[in-house]
Structures are given as structure tokens and as C-alpha cells.
Image 1 (cartoon, rainbow over the protein chains, first blue to last red):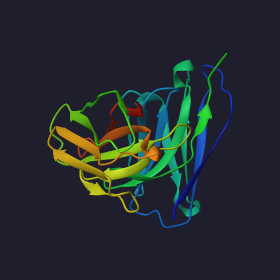
Image 2 (cartoon, rainbow over the protein chains, first blue to last red; image 1 turned 90 degrees about the vertical axis):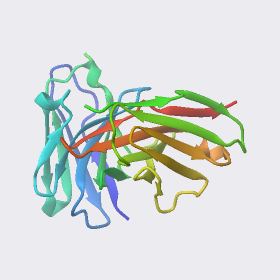
Image 3 (cartoon, rainbow over the protein chains, first blue to last red; image 1 turned 180 degrees about the horizontal axis):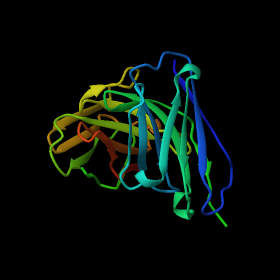
Image 4 (cartoon, chains in turn orange, green; image 1 turned 180 degrees about the vertical axis):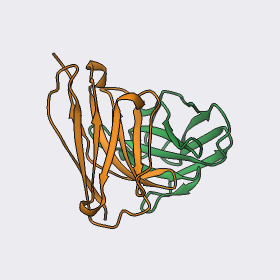
Length: 116
Length: 109
């Protein structure tokens, strides 16, 4: 059973860089999309971007200029960086692993507040 | 970008009810649609993919239908554990983007 766990900072200040890690355990994750998704308080889900096993990335156009996703396949670990955060980036951030266009495995999510 | 619109946004229902909710895509997506259930404070859970294929381990009271632009998630007999918010999600083969709908909250009538 694949398990994912997000880790990262607590409170961020506006203009800082959000950095989150996702550790994957419990199974092979080849052929998956390693993905970040977020959910603002009381709102719906927003896809941030993914990295594929071959290193190909794709990002939500609304966030593309600020997002970088990287992967360390040897250690089953992938990361999210979001630069120049504002209060609008306050959200629960989920890592998820998907295949065939869906997300079968999710982390528990981590709340990242942005406040001055 | 393809947009997904879910309705209703809120669905009051009682235990034992048959409930249905809709997801409409802004353009045809064949059957590239999934449904998720999310409970407060929890990550979403995949219920259905390929518009109508039940994810392993998911109760058979959940079913999905549709293709093209209009999709439906049906719960045949609502149970207490089914009160949650349901999201649809599509994957666009080009340019490989994912989109979620705004959600339908199934709540106690």
C-alpha cells in the first residue's frame, strides 16, 4: 500500500518561498504522476502541477511562473517550491500520486498559512 | 482550459435516499473523468475513474455514468458515512492538465 507524507514549514510571511517535501513509501511508484494539489480554506481543489518519472513537468498556468516541482526517485521523494507567496496561497497542500489521469494515493495534507 | 461545473453545490438528503449529482465539462472529454469523496479534515478519496469504473474497495452503491460533457455520480442508497463533499476531476491529454469541479456537498436534510 503506497503511503505519502508531506512535510514543510508552518507559518510563512508574504514574499517568502514555500517549500514542501513528499515522502513516498510502501510500493513502487514508477509510471506515476507525482503531483501537488492544494485546497484553500473552505474552498475546492486546485491542481498545482506534476512531475513524471522521466522528469517531465507540467504546471497549472495560473501558478506556472512561481512553481517548481522536482523529484528524487532514488529516495522516493518529491518536492514543491512556490515563490513569492501571498495570503492567497494559504491552503492545505496535498501530495498525490496518480496514473491514467487520476489520483489514487494522497498524503494527509499540510496546512501552510501565509500571514504577516 | 477545460472547466468543470458541478451542480447542485449543496444536496440535502436523508439516509436511504437515492442521490445524483452532475458534472459538466466545458468541452468534450470522452470518458476522462473521475469522482472523489472528501470528508472534513481528510484527503479526497478516489471513487470512480474512466467515468464509470469503480475504484477497488469502493462500495457498489456508488456509480458513475456519462461521456463527452455531461457526467453523473449516483449513490443508490445513502448511508451515514456518505455525507461528504464530492468532486469531479478531468485530465486533459493535451496539454496534460488536471481540473477539478467546485464540489457538491451532500448534507443531512
